Length: 292
Image 1 (tube, rainbow, N blue to C red):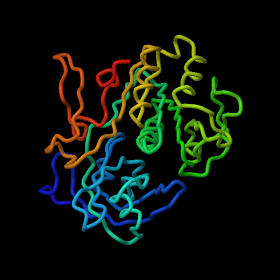
Image 2: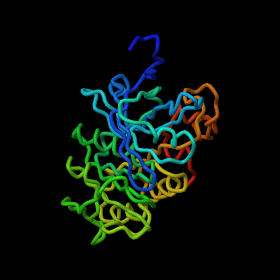
Image 3: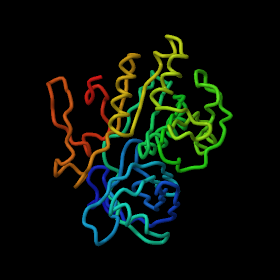
């Protein structure tokens, strides 16, 4: 890509759709050929997609997976409005305009190798991306807890990875993570087999309670999902005195910091400040956003 089309790590790319896989609950896994984005993306970042030439406003989608060598990028999204409905109609071989990667990524602390990753609903993709990177780098031991109140966008299966503290019968796992040796468990209040019957924050508490004091001192929490889930996660982290980073989901217009339409109030050492979720985030320290 010509450098004149870049702003820092943000690039403008014409991405070819490689596949579009539909799942229950109007969910889709989209794979596009976008080598520039794949080469620069970090867990927690997102892209701004042009869903259709006739629709002026782009849509932000969190990055779920990348392959820098092959140049593809995966996204999980749910149809919630006109833009994503148009995106769901796209077929393999078509092209879409991609702006990204955008935003501040997660920054795991090497002194805390027991990483607890919580993903709720369409907040699952950043956790999958982060878990794969942590596993690949070898310093961290990620545990991924995923929650959904609609059918999961994958065919779950019983896990072969034992996790101390997880209640008996909670054996449902995401095969993609399991095949890479990454421990994961699922939670839902819909009665899905093998899933924890409740919130993922409650399941996380079970795991934390099973750790001794030394083990808990090695834990760092990362989360992405609906606002109430993130607030509950911040409360859980505070109770156990653990560092916590959260990725916020906000409506975005420009997504490059120009319109200030996605600002949130954040506590800083200089006092309250208004920060743009798109470029100052979407990842923030949980305690700067929530007051658990």
